[in-house]
Image (cartoon, rainbow, N blue to C red; front, side, top):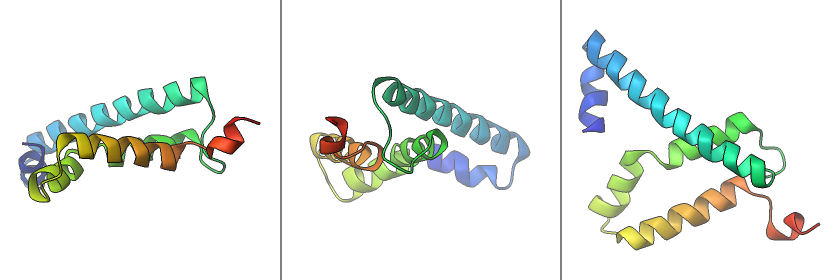
Length: 100
């Protein structure tokens, strides 16, 4: 549905506003995740809050799930494991640094 809305938003002002609101809500959710990480730890060196939000926002986009699970036939568990590993790799410092 999100892809249909995104495509339709290019030619309809009202649908564009709806799509924009949807993306703003997704970004707000990404900010909650990034802020929770910052509350418990620190982000990877060189990564600020805004970049952390961007990473969560893009990696949790529905089209990534669709492509890997529906098109490439990954299992839900495989996708969940990959997403968790990828978010940790992209957002958190190496484990050795956390223990310092």
